[in-house]
Length: 61
Image (cartoon, rainbow, N blue to C red; front, top):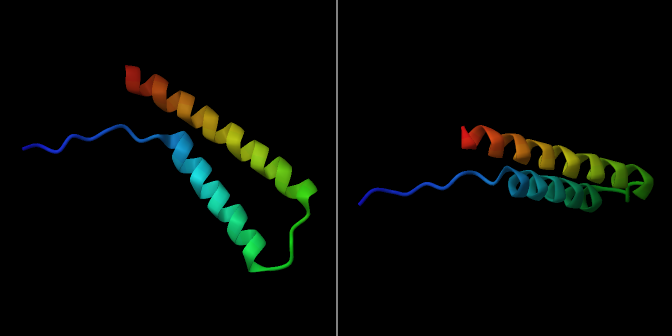
């Protein structure tokens, strides 16, 4: 039987990596400033969403 592959969910992958990185940052040392982390989180989510949209458009072709 052949192995069925499914497309990569880039949004979920990048969000997971980002949240793991932010969690690791909080666990690794002194607590970072929330006014720095919040924009990093929002920009990261926006980038992940943009990449997911581009991947979906490329996949349709």
